[in-house]
Image (cartoon, rainbow, N blue to C red; front, side):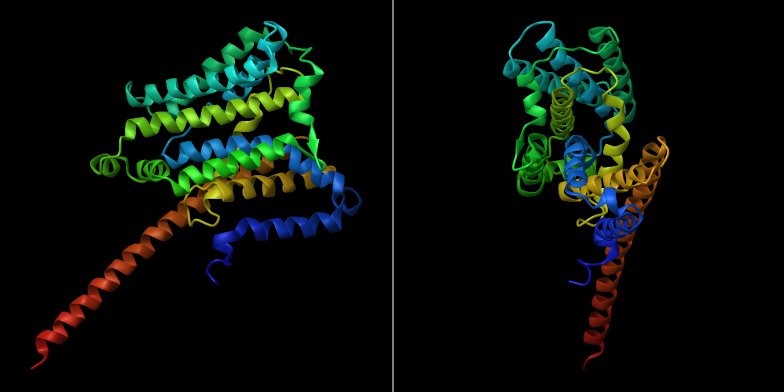
Length: 338
């Protein structure tokens, strides 16, 4: 119980409590309102979806630097299909989501068969996608997406918008796959030690491709919801998701699971970071504060996650050495006995 409530295990919750107290005292009239918290819950849902997608890739040991561009491409593609091609809402959404999965598969193939590091492969893919966004949209907003499509991203149930429920459902699905299925165990095994996983019979190439495809699908869903919420295909939408999503995923890895990427920690971290940004904005902070806050949070989260993994390995080694010494003492005592 003590370990479960330790700062190392649930630091994000303690940070949230501190942020809540600070802003409740600093700007109570604007921070302590139901409207503010509903807005915070809604605005961060898309970032949380993207971060959950990153959890899948990071758990497999992959850096998907194209995730922001994938959101942007999904946002523009669904808008293009609706406005320029006059395709129905459901087919346009399905095609966009499939396109996101295909982009992830292409990235996976580059990693697996072209032997390009995921960092470089997805960075190059990001540039390609941004070029595609500019080409499809002519670097202009795509308008006239229709009120019915806008309802997908702005409709509400008991005052909570649909994207929040979608985020919860997608998070639960990814959590179940990673934590409760053989496929999830293979993902974690590949990310932990790809050579050991391969020797154990895990088809690591498939895991890599599947992980990037899943990340692409979730990024495309976030892109669809972004266009729906704005009722506009905005070519500048995607890149703004990259830094907050990575910050949430890394900070989330330090929560609940002792340095392992996990869905619950990531969603909690996404909202903790959003609370900090929102509070500073309500307090009249400069417009560049969100970038500064998320950048510092990412650096701290990466450092903390590295520390936890190192500490975990040291603890495991210590336990092994302790068991070995205890075994030797037992053997010595047995040998000395008459």
